[in-house]
Amino acid sequence: MTAVPGASALTPVLVRLKLSLLRNGLRQSAGRRAAYIASVGFALLFAALQLLGLIALRGNTHAATVCVLLVGLLALGWAVMPLFFPSGDETLDPTRLVMLPLRPRPLVRALLVASLVGIGPLFTLCLAVGATIALARGAAAAATGVLATALTLLICVALARAVAAANIRLLTSRKGRDLAVLSGLVIAVGAQAVNFGAQKLGSSGLGTLDPAAALVRWIPPAAALGAVDSVSEGAYAKAVAQLALCAAALVALLALWQHSLTRLMTTPDGSTLATAEPEKGTSRASGTLGRLLPAGRTGTVMERSLRYVWRDPKTKAAWVTSLAIGLIVPVFNALQGTGSVYIACFAAGMLGILMYNQFGQDTSAFWMVAMTISSTRDAYVELRGRALALLLITLPYATLVTTLTAAMLGDWPTLPEALGLSFALLGAMLATGCWSSTRFPYSIPQEGYKNVAPGQAGLAWLSIFGGMVAAALLCAPVLALTIWLHASDAASWTWLLLPLGAAYALAVAEAGLRLSAPRLAGRLPEILTAVSRG
Image (tube, helix red, strand yellow):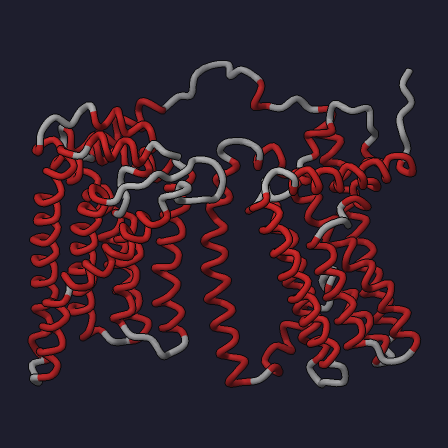
């Protein structure tokens, strides 16, 4: 029988394996090496500046608040990273080891040590060391800081590995990869939350964070830094309780990780098992959707476009990001009390961008669409169906965001004209999106995180930003009318901007469809070549 290696023999093997994966990955291309070196340099620079900044906080009244909250945010990042970037680290996938004669317990210990190799652990170590120096006062606090630093680093790494192991079947499946589309939402919400928080701190000071820090200092691993501060203040019993919480959390995470590894090694992958019968309700759902849409080619094109939104990861990611940012920007500005109802036009603009490069999302499958276009009329109906599919979501969404913004600001008189401007902007972007899709098509790679195929970045810039400038110019008449009504003391007539804006949007969108249809019908081979490059 083959001897099963223990943790002492397995640990150096996995550490060398981690280093080999890193070294071999960098050998693939010079671009990858340059990107990795640049990311390492940036991370180290940021870590060094952060370390110096935390050390500079030593003796500050709010040093404990800042350090505890920073460690809490860092731990949150470690927890969500495997969910949003499952392919970012190949060693996060324990299914690669299930065929080896390894026991879960020594494997967990060896993987934990190997996981300490990387930029993330080094960055975490720098933050923990800086926080410890900022909080430790006296020999007892310094000794506690050494233990707190180790606990913080181990808990963060174990947290990421436990989350990855518990969800690896989902994350490596086709549907599970769609979780990555939420990264756009999290980034958008996080950016606005940071902006909102920074403004509040600028006006109120760090003291407003003290209640939150009082809670977070009892949540591992931030509790470890809370223990350092407790020892510095002479609250030894409190420090022992915080360290005990961290130790218990580490043991629980390791146990969860080991349990997940045991399940992975002993349970067959459900994705490899044949289903007993085909899924029920698929045809019924398709029929329901078809009955709600117009008959003929228009309804078919709309249904195809809506299915892209739901099934294609890249298309879904674009929609989720646009929907999130389109709502967050006006709502956060309204919460700060500095917003305007007109900012709600941002929602229409974000979703209008999705009309650009309509054929790039089809990739090489566009040839099936091209075979059904034999005349300008066919091209017109194809473009109209795609525009109507976008309007089906965008029109009520833009109306909802504008109404919500007006309600939060209490500025109901401005709602009609803001809606009129939103509709006009949306119609202009539909028109320029149709024209840009036929004039500057480019391919969207299906694999990886790139949204433009190599060599087509210039086309993408012309398509999106050129179209947006043209849409802004098309909206000039409605915007000029709005300014004139306010400047001439005719504000009582601004409600006319709602029907006028809607009518103008319809006319501009129809003109864009009419102008783009002949170009689509005449450039099918060129468009097919452009969108199939990826």
